[in-house]
Image (cartoon, rainbow, N blue to C red):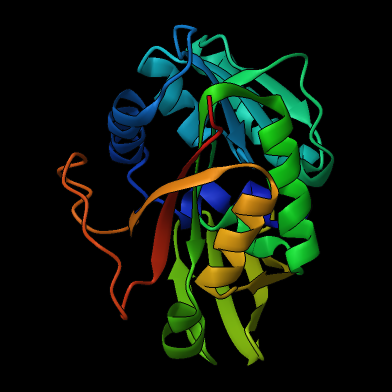
Length: 257
């Protein structure tokens, strides 16, 4: 998923995402569940996108490596790095072919990035690569959209976003458990007062929880806990259980010591 056009507008369209609070929740979970013999500060932000979460985690003291398959998204992340001066390392890699220089204390993959993989075989590849580079006792924390969200919330919905930078029409179409997203952007040009149209096509696939549990086991990772990823974000240490109406599940897994 390269986000050729989406990258330029991503931050404008996700201003409702509270990255500092999500980073605080991750920090709470890392301190609670990490069992490595190292200091636990080397963190991989998998599918880091435009780098907002990487920045928030670096501010909490983590040594962050951000990996994404989109050069356009990484360009946005690098611009933030230049402004903040934070020592984040960014790498352009397909997460199915993740290749690190050494072992990692914590890997996070947030905001349903794994749902962009369109098969369980691809999910399994990612889990295997994460496990390969994980320190014994290291954590893999990720979230994924649920079948409920795809069928009951996103199914055949149209969303409109109107900001000073762009007007976006977001159309969803559900096929089986996959949401096909057609994004149409109208960008205002200050030079000639015209709007210029670009389009992006994105898919997200939801998977049964038992399939994700089995994929973790196959990769040699033990599942510790699951929570509702979007509840109580104002109090990151309070985590809600998964319910039938949970739209995004937060998974916490660990490589056995």
